Amino acid sequence: MADVQAIILVGGEGTRLRPLTYGTPKPMVPIAGVPFLARSMERLYEAGITDVILAAGYMPKAITDYFGNGSRLGMRVTYAIEETPLGTAGALKNVAQHVTGRFFVFNGDILTSLDLRSMMEYHESKGGSGTLHLIRVPDPSAFGCVVHDDQGAVSAFVEKPAPGAAPCNDVNAGTYLLEREVLDAIPGGRAVSIERETFPKLIASGKRLYAFVTDDYWIDLGRPENYLTAHRDVLSGLMPLLVEPGITGDGARELRDKRSIVEPVHLDAGTSIDPTATVGPNVVLGRGCWIGAGAVVRESVLWDDVRVGPQAVVEESILASGVRVGAGARIGAGSVVGHGYTVEDGLEVEEGSRLSDRS
Ligand code: GDD
Ligand code: MG
Image (cartoon, rainbow, N blue to C red):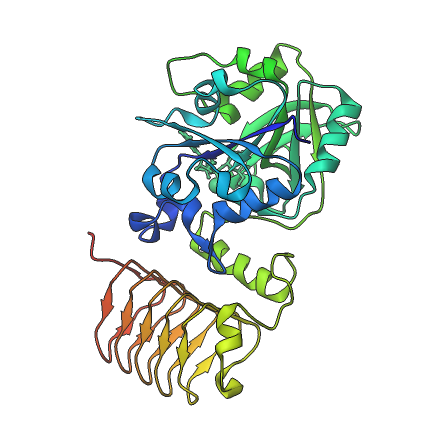
């Protein structure tokens, strides 16, 4: 698929992931130690797509510094940085001068096992202006509902329907394959939503859009609970990403004493775990994490250089880089702790807390 370009929408502010996204833009949030966007790029590379346009806006430097011109990955990366957010279609119009033909569009926060080559084959067999990847969900209210017939022809697109008012359970899964002419339907010079404006307009004007419904692994990483679920699924192998579930990562090789580990876990290089601690199941420790004597860390993702003091307990939580959890402190389930924050010794952090130095 060397002739197909990809545009990845990475301009959102990641508000639902705050305080993580105060210090790290959503696409650079790590999945088992690697920025999510890097994992997405790898997936494109494997599908033979090497010409990628990143439509960014919020904290773009973290992205441009990491990917540069893409040559390190064997890819060509072009950036478009939006001063003010242009919306999901405005962002595409904004890069029109770089688009030479048929192109994929990716919401930058979707983890999926979707096979891009089979989507391409389906698109070619249908011959429409665009193909939308859909998945079936029990509650579509947080997504875009896509009504289609059993031949796949799309007849309506309803973004975020009111609860109970959803016309169907097949929702927009955030991957589109579009012909270049779709860009002509997007007005320039203002913010435009592809979900609320462009897709409905294309349908109304008689352009043919097709639904590609699959039962792939699929999750939107933009919410803390989904971020943890995604990790659990990656660690268990439900979402195929790590070579072999169990104890994975560079830190696994350095591990001298496995007594403290409850599989599955992923450990990055330089992690230090006291043999009397309990780490796992479903835990990711980033580079240089330190877990003290008798501490318990379960169902949690810790980024780089996090220190968990002796006898502290961390459950079902996300701790950004540089967080310090004091001796005997307890982090209640569903908490998210921002970059460099210190939790005092013995403190009981309530379930579902959001802690950061930025108020
Ligand atoms: N460049 C750019 N500019 N990117 C943007 C902008 C913008 O103004 N606004 C949003 N994005 C990016 C976000 O960074 C994200 O990667 C993607 O577009 C989708 O935005 P979200 O804010 O995550 O939308 P959502 O999750 O509420 O809904 C979207 O995704 C659902 C699937 O998860 C919609 O496409 C729904 O229809 C869909 O079902
Ligand atoms: Mg999203």
